[in-house]
Image (cartoon, rainbow, N blue to C red; front, top):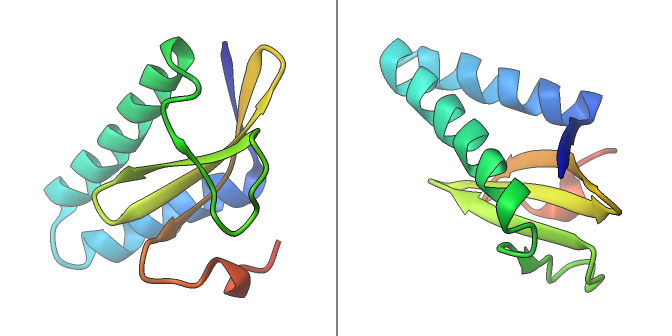
Length: 96
């Protein structure tokens, strides 16, 4: 399996890092590293995440890292990272 990051997902990760860095640069790095580790785990277990309730499509799934939802789509032999949002945010408010 190959991991493909969409531009919005990359921007989300950068925004998360920038936001957390305001309090702790070390914690910001740890959060991003954990997100990347989790995505690497998906290569072996791509269906590890649950189906996103808002979409109810079996190929659009999510996995949680701390308080963040990593939303991804299974496409053949690839995993496309669509977005990473804080779990308190309404997915409908994300403009994509």
